[in-house]
Amino acid sequence: MNELIENPYQAFVDAPDTPVMNCPLKCAANVEDDEVRYLWKPYILRGDVTILAAAGGTGKTFALCGIAAELSNGRYPLNPFEKFEPMRVLFISAEDPDFILRDRMRRAGADLEKVFIMDATDSMRLRLSDGQGNPRLHDLMAAIEAAKPDLVILDPLHAFVGSTVKMTEQSAVRPFMQALANLAKNNDCAIVDVAHVNKRPAGSNANDAILGATDVVNAARSVLRVIFDETGNDPNRRVLVHTKSNYAAMGQSVAFRIGDDGKLDWIGYSDVTRSDLEAAARSNKALSEHMTAKEADRAARSFVVERLLALSEEQTEPKRFYSYDTLRGMGISGKADIAPALGELKRKEVYVEFPNNPKLEHSGDKKTKRGIILYRKAQTRSV
Image (tube, rainbow, N blue to C red; front, side, top):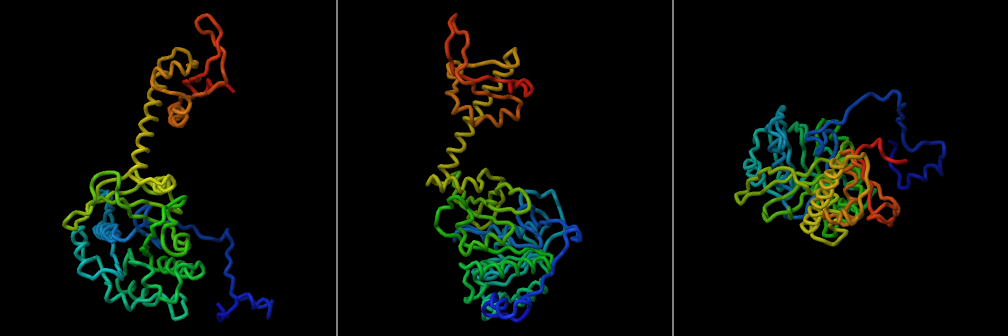
């Protein structure tokens, strides 16, 4: 790139025929095949940047130490049977001393020979920017060359970018995120940037709570959130929620527990999703309240599916009308109960239609009755 100028658009005014930068265009027909690769699919990508965000004191460092411990032993969290070559980890922290990180790794079962630490004391000298706020990754590159890691953790990212970089400005953040992604690709490793979240409700987008410019999230290909597990009575339970995934479906949330002795245990998968975080925020409910209501809705939906599925199997004709009076006797109030179950019924090849006041024979008299028509097979549906 040519020498930087204060206003890049001024070049077109002063010398319109002089390009500001070279344009390395590629013909799409000549682009070579490649594949998206993961350190832990679909949560952490190799050759790119992942964000892990949490409020202070939630347990994000415990989660990272737990993930690093599994990878250092050549296995994935919750999946000890799929073995691979043990991975090397470089943990750069601006918050914790080395003995704390080592102890958390040890308690999580890490192979400490595969883990390299730059703690809060040593990392004070690490800067990712120059005096003008431009990316300067020489120090990080030197650490990566020395450790040769598969996984690099920057905890937290904003501690290393330098005071001249305004993390709340898009134009300041994007060059750093792109530079980190390029560094990850060139060194065939994954970089996990740790971020904090504010106290605002998640609203329509759970990732909006992550501090800094939105390009911190936009430039990352995967985002993880650590939250307290409010679905039970154990205050030591946490959930790792996948809230962004650019190249694959979002992974199922993972629950873990931080014991009184500081040991991390992976518990299993959790039903909490990004949508749950957002729905709870929109309704101004605690996550536990939302999850309780969600479970009640799921139980009600299953009840309707079971009843209508049984009806479809009992009826001798391919299709039949059932009045709401009949359905209420079975515990189904009406259309409001049935509508949420339509998708699951369809997957079971049972279809429901809501006719407009069908006139049917009833007790010898024609009466207008409201209800549903139930079909057992897709091919019997009316047009």
